[in-house]
Length: 270
Ligand SMILES: [Zn+2]
Image 1 (cartoon, rainbow, N blue to C red):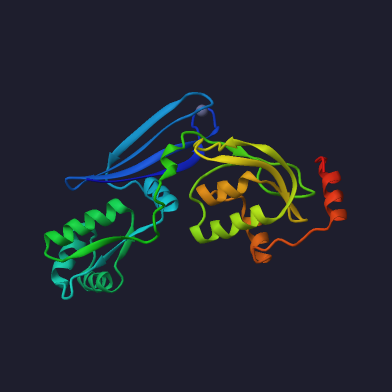
Image 2: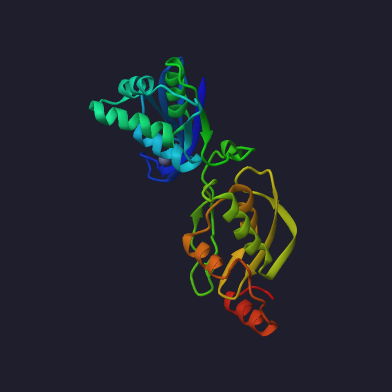
């Protein structure tokens, strides 16, 4: 059996609150199934839907959350005829396109969800063509995402002159390399205020996070964002990511006068 799940943020269809649903695809004995399930923490509405075949909605959510899986032909001398038979069983194409699709499959493989690629691999192997399923993007080892049961909102990094907003903490929205650079920026800027105590993270309660306020002279944020970005790869905002990248992820040094000025502006005790 192959099973792949992901989480999707969307409005509760009873009360409109932003909630997480778990979407999944399963391949079991060559039967393909999709499912969506979730519960709303605001109105306690619970939903479950499932069906056979591919759901475009579930497929899109899985690819957005986990990244695509891939399939690659490993047979050194695969039979084009066998591959054409497999493709014909899935798509109706005129003969010349069928041949081109088979040749494309050998040259480029395919990409899709883990369940799709696994089913395609099974069908190819049934026809004597050896293929393997590959993850196009490396999977995080811990899969902390499965522990996330509800939507948590935090104040994201903001420009000094902007009001506070709230954003949902949605894991796995950043590539690992960018998350690391961004987390480094978030924790190496200037400390405006810091507390001695630490608090459990709001997503899984597994990490102890520092309490502090940071600034780079233009933006201000709570220090725990460094951990939400590094450990859970939450996206603080496209604007902030662009800003940090434009500074090559190296915060500038701020002098005391500037710091005091910022503290006064924000009402943070300096
Ligand atoms: Zn609701």
